[in-house]
Image (cartoon, rainbow, N blue to C red; front, side, top):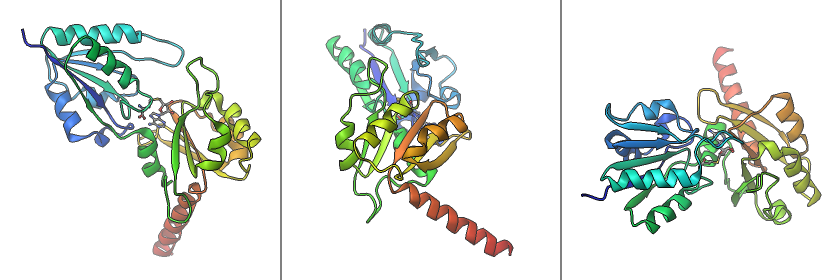
Length: 256
Ligand code: SAH
């Protein structure tokens, strides 16, 4: 019996066209597709007719399938000689638990491969016109989680992040927004630092709101920002404002 293969794949940030060619080919040829909540239906529709599609979605607070169960299913389908695609939003190794799944497969001696995806920070940076780095404005960025494994505000070093990183991108931060805001302010990040919230980035439902660090919670409440959303904090948020102003000026001069 052949040993099968598990391809742990990043589906990209939301826009189905932002998947890699390699990942799409794997979806089209797989026998089994196990996919997460953030993966769009359009990509699942690429699977061949006979492929088995298994939803492993994890809505916040609700775990429809445990990580252990997912690992066992991946291993058992692969052990039957099947090609299994494990499809995750963004990149599998960035807050995607892809590493845990690879470890489980390695322990069971199941062949696997990792195919990267555009992580949501990179996808939404492009779609929101907020560069993660920008000459003279931002020479570093960091991606951190806003929520710890116990469900409360993450224990990343907010004190260091407040000072040592130019563009800060916070995943899974909306439910902890007021604590994150307080942590950064408490550690001396200026309240007037430009900030943005990006909901469903790169999709047709994308919403972007901008303001300052001090206003973040108010903005989120006013616009009812929901997951999936990212928080971006840093001066390069102003590049978006500049680009939008120039677009407006250009369209005004064309119509005027
Ligand atoms: N592996 C994924 C991250 C999964 S963690 C990646 O590489 O992007 C889930 C978090 O990702 C969400 O809480 C949200 O903060 C972020 N996220 C994922 N897709 C997003 C999108 N389209 N727009 C904004 N944030 C997104």
